[in-house]
Image 1 (cartoon, rainbow, N blue to C red):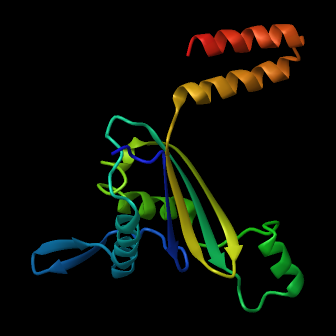
Image 2: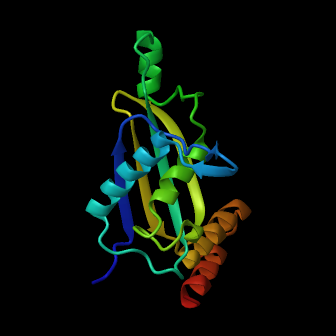
Amino acid sequence: MKLKDKIKIEVEGQPVAKGRPKFRRIGNYISTYTPKKTVNYQDRVKEVASDIIKEQYEEDIPLQAYIKAYYKIPKSTTKVKRAGMIEETIRPLVKPDLDNIAKIILDSLNKIAYKDDSQIVRLVIEKFYSEEPRVETEITKLDLHKDYKKQVLELLDKLNLEEEDYNNVVEIIDKRG
């Protein structure tokens, strides 16, 4: 069975950050534990992902992740601001921070979507407002050749080459695979 080139999951509800480990003293010992809110959210992510993902990416495949965190629009928001939030011209400048959202999502997908989140070599994460708070995650294989070709073509566009020269370079790139 061929693994999908793209995995998409959506976790409903307000975005949650990965909480820092907590410590407690029990007699002469110090015990560490993960905050309950973090554990509960990771369990939700794993449950949603397990329902969708039936096979994980092989460990030698570089991946990219695109995460969109949608925050609930506050009830006290004016109509004008609400419209801006829906049109994505006003973005959330609130916690949780993006890096902690990425951490909880990517850690939760370990051994489900991929062997380890160290396979993620490119990460894009953005915050938005929505009437329906959620976190959408898309994991795809990173096609390094396609990415390289795209970069070269963008550079060629900036150089303002004659059409014939441009086409010759594109032909060379295509021949080399």
